[in-house]
Image 1 (cartoon, rainbow, N blue to C red):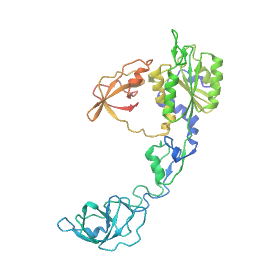
Image 2 (image 1 turned 60 degrees about the vertical axis):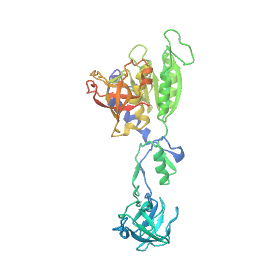
Image 3 (image 1 turned 45 degrees about the vertical axis):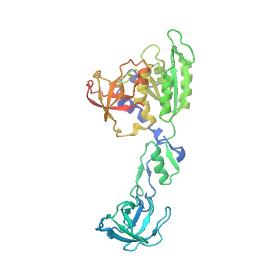
Image 4 (image 1 turned 45 degrees about the horizontal axis):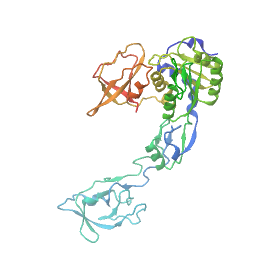
Length: 413
């Protein structure tokens, strides 16, 4: 099974993602309804339109007096405009009396204006002359110090487009329109498996030639960061049948399978062999035009995504962010990329190797701007990523970056 012609064919990140899309776009047609209280961090599965105007009544933005603006024209501290106070509006109540010319009504912040009022005079610009008589010491214009009906939202307006990740402010917006059940994408189920005869669990003491399983836990952390359901399957040795049995189980139980190690070209390239034999279409790319992370494989089996990530810790983390994360946060559906912050490099970064490159960097505050200090370190070192605050992306068509150049970066913290 599988398309053998794709084996060992290096693709760009865009080409790799595009090769997977036709087989798994159905991921984003699924809908789960969750309560508003449990919606934080979830991804909206469809456009959400407002069923009502917000606010649905005109409200004051100040403590003061609701008036007809025309009654204040020409007012000043030396010659105030006099208005007769007609009581007070209480919070949560609608005005019951019409506002006649030459009169006003005291109103709190958020209070509902009478229909005839078109402005609010701030409390600081009112002078009380006794009884119901007030002087306005500064004129107000129509619409001043109030929020009109629908000024925040209009009926039918799309307030949350599909693939919006719900934050605290989105929860507040949904509460404002009375939406207590929210349509979201189901959480991706992601299975993580480390492979290799040399890999041992973290609780064991490594012998010479052995290494504790770093990638299984960095990948677990990355998956959980993006709100997916993660399942760590442990470690499997370089045994074809054992790996085949476990992979079949993982395909049944997950939407996305991440294999760490076993992705380089060689006699022990079991991951690629198995993915290409488990089902159609199998392997879709073997190798990325990416540094670090060239020996990455990707494919689809039974509508499930399978990625073979490099064994080097920094490489595995960078490849995850470049090609796995866009599925978890639905970035593969975005036609536009959100703008990234920018900073200036403290050192030259050499490139021009025909591959995209991701360079970890420290962020150094410099007045009102950021400086980026590249972190030099090999992809097999996990501490390189621990020290990094940001990642600088060098595009395919860029032959290095000079010190002092302003570049876009992505926060890692």
